[in-house]
Image (cartoon, rainbow over the protein chains, first blue to last red):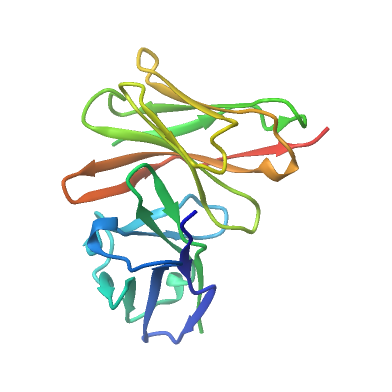
Length: 109
Length: 122
């Protein structure tokens, strides 16, 4: 089965920029996988941030952006804030279903 | 505003069948071209897609769970349901229902339920 890979953890300083990535155990991520990104804080349901590679969901600040970087999907947070400290998950569409990445725990310090 | 709410027993015995229902409000489950999906998350771990159903009744399941999962829809009640058979402690998790918006160029979860914890224990 296809494995979607994400960095287990990342840290960023307040005001800094961080890029989280979403790859495949075999092959490259392209826009055809319709990558989407979700933010989750402890005890809460996930919140949709980005879909279709780079479209921000309603109400999502423009400091969050999505792209394809090389052979991976990427989520960039520009001007990180303390409340961006969360788990971030990417999801790839595989035709007959969807696969979650393992998630990245982002620390802002 | 579409809202989803999971409901069902919070405790299930090993080897039994886990049954959950997701009630959709703020819109008809039959309107538009949406899939309706289940996702789960064991404590301290990541999210796992379980499966999806279209209002026509067509389904797709995670291959790792396919032999034990059934997702169904009841359009008259604006609900869809999950059944997971032969459960073990490894099925203990928070279970989320979600709507999948899809079209030419996009496919993503746009609305989520708050989640419900199901514990498998005797």
